[in-house]
Every structure is written in C-alpha cells, then in structure tokens.
Figure 1: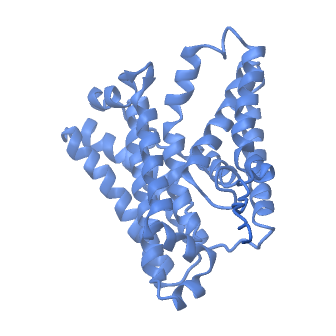
Figure 2: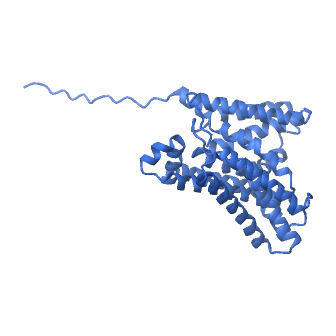
Figure 3: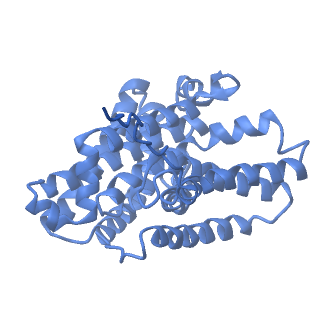
Length: 333
C-alpha cells in the first residue's frame, strides 16, 4: 500500500498593503501630528478641553456645508450656491421668528423649505436647459445673496427664540455642544447611503461617466436632480444650525464658509476612501483645517493667514485628489 499525502494546502494570510493603508489614513495622521505640535507649543491655551470642545462644536456648520457639497460632487456637479442657501435659510428663520413672531418649529420648517426651492431651481436650469452646474449655481447663489440683503435690509437680525440656541450650542453632552453630534449624525447617514445603498452606487456611477450610466439603464437626470436637491436641503439645515450657533442671522458672514467647505471636500477625497468624495474623510479634513487655523491664530499670526491657509489647502487638496485619481481630467458639471 502507498502512503497518502495528508499535507493540507497552505493558505497565505492576507497581506496588509502598507502603501494603501498609508494613503487612506495619511490625513488622519497629519491631523494628529498637527494637533500635537500646537499642543506642545501652546499647552495652556490650545491644549485645553475648553478649546478642544469649542473647536468641535463651532465647526458643525462647516461640516454640514461640506457634506452638502460632496453629494453633487459625487454625481459630477458643482454647487456654488450652498453658502448662499445657508445664509438665506438662516435669514428666513430670523425674519419669520424674530420679526413676524412665527413659532420656532414653523420658522425652521420655512427655512428648510427655502432650501428645497433652491435645490429645485438649480436642478431645473441645469437639467432642463442643459447649462453647466458651475454657471447655474454661481448665478443662483449671487441672486440669493441679493435677496437676503433685501430681506434683512442689509442688517443682522437678532432675537431668535433662545430655545434654538439651547438646542444647538447651549446644551452640552460630555462637555461638547450638541451641534457637534448633529454633524456626526449627518455624516453617518451620508456614509451609510454612499456605502450601503443603491442610491449611493448610482451617484458614484453617474459621476464617473454619465453616458455609460445612461446606457446601463440608470436615470441620470433623476439622480442628478436628487443630488442637487439634497445638497440644498442640507445647506438649509446648516443655515438653521448657524442661526442657532450665533443666535441671529447675518446677511453676509455665511458666504465665508464656501471656500473652506470646498477645501475640506477635496482634501477629504484623499483620505479614508481615496479618489472618492466621502463623509468620513470630509469630517477629518474639516477638523484638520480648523486645527491649523486655530493654532496659527493662537500663535499670534495675523488674520490674513486664514485666507492663505484656506486657499492653499484648496489648491493642494485638488492636486492631491487628482494624483489619487491618476490625473484624470475633471468634468465640470
């Protein structure tokens, strides 16, 4: 008799691609390093729980606006009207609640509805007339800025129901304002939609190639419509959050969020899921930028550094995003 070979086949253990891991989490590592540098340089001011909790809570509006941007960006459209939508939604809330005496829940609903109207208008001009999204949303955003100035008579409107302030920044959980948790919840919802639903897959497919998506049976215009609508609705939520953060509505300051939001969106596309706009990477990018601005400000750097940081971060983020995408030509929607 012959002996049978009973040796079991050897199965190689899965190998960890170090380069891939480094690419995914480089921005997270950079955030930790940047935080550590400022913590060592400014132990009594930067490295305090009061400062950390303030940074976490105060940037929820920027997180919301960045999340609003990445939805149409994923489907291949640019929405330059998100900051103006934020501003007019906050102003609508203030006018209804503070000036006209409308109950807070109804005023919030009105502000949210304004965002829906903006989203429908954007989608109508982009999809029906086939005008590039960059042009339409820039024009709509400028129109909204003028409308906001008219509504407010170019003045800040205060006196918003204090319940909104308490629900946004006045109440804290573990020392952090509730606004931070709202932003994380919104990021989690978008993360689930992008990663685990057919809607997220369609968004990505449309963004990668509209004609191919159309030939595959995807209703491209419907996907783009809902991506633009979702962007404006989330921007309106950011406006409500902003009104609750400052307890008022300013007709101008909301526009300062646009450049940081784009910088965070593109910088976030280089992390976690490199080459794709993703909510987790966007949140990390927001706080990376904020840590840099806060630390430099506390070191006594003049205010112009904020524009330098935001502008430089945007260009660098787009460049890095293009490297991750193998320098594919960007399609402006």
